[in-house]
Length: 199
Image (cartoon, rainbow, N blue to C red; front, side, top):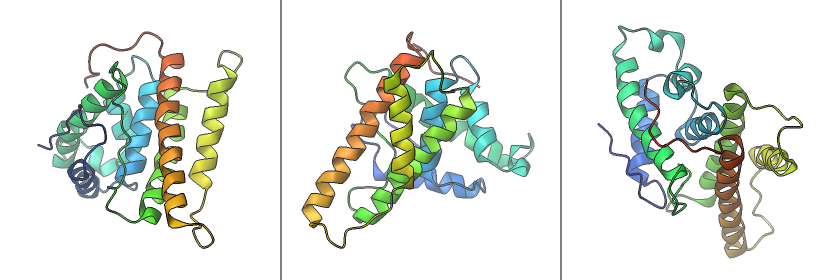
């Protein structure tokens, strides 16, 4: 079983690679970053719903969801580990929540693409979990969700920008997303869940 530590400031490259391999085995159509974004969106909006089952149904093709298909059990075990770690991070008073993104050793283009897909997945997960722009949602949350949409659509263009400046800008955007997710969680789920959601 993969070991996803809930206490790392960032998910490690091993976490990312293990989860990527799991998704490949399960014939998922999305990568690890986007899939983790979907999970976090669901955790923010789905409340007491069965998040693991809902997440699984969004990631895996129909044949992989059959009870007798071994990849379903594989995803349940490994996916639950990542879900538990993520939920603990999101509810940690130390604000240890981290996005599951390509490692810092990867090129900036790869990491920026990962962040864009993460934001795309997050907004998708929010919608699946029941989030809708409404009068009951604060303008701050609406703005954050819209900003995430812009980040998801943003391209990478470093031709005329200093490499160090580009790296610094990426770190700022990643931190903005990370903190923004916690703010969204705080508003949509004000009573934080104290126990991991089980299937």
